[in-house]
Image (cartoon, rainbow, N blue to C red; front, side, top):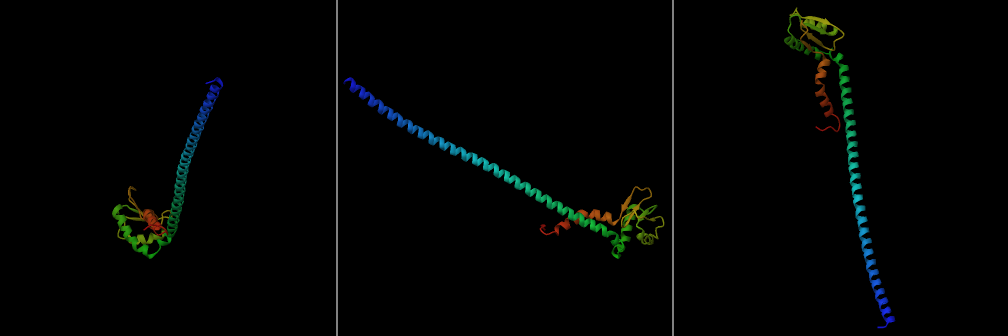
Length: 195
């Protein structure tokens, strides 16, 4: 083979090799680009999935906080309602202490208080409106002294002579003792309360 033929053959082979290398390089570049694009899409999906998880978690937290705040407001409103009802009831106690229903229970309360405190040297503090009725109930117990005062609630308080034992039979104290039970009953009667 002559030199020009050899050169032509080498050139042709070089061009074929270059074309093959170029095709392989382009194919490799397309594969790398496809892999890179797939990798980018996969990473974007992961980022979106992570953001969505964070958004959902945030939304759940905000929903829970809003629900908590709502429940807190409902509980505060219910508490205020119970307080208003009990305060209204407390305001009605002076009138209730003048009713016949209370008078019919007064002697029994007095007897129970004296059973506990004793009737020797006992002082019964009461509202002026109840003084005569209590004195009448205590006619058979001259050692018990009835002392009216405006500073006592609706009812009476029995105190022993040493002032160590005190039985508070005022309607205010009875209401205070019943307040938790009354609060439950009041709340049960509210619309939307469960039985």
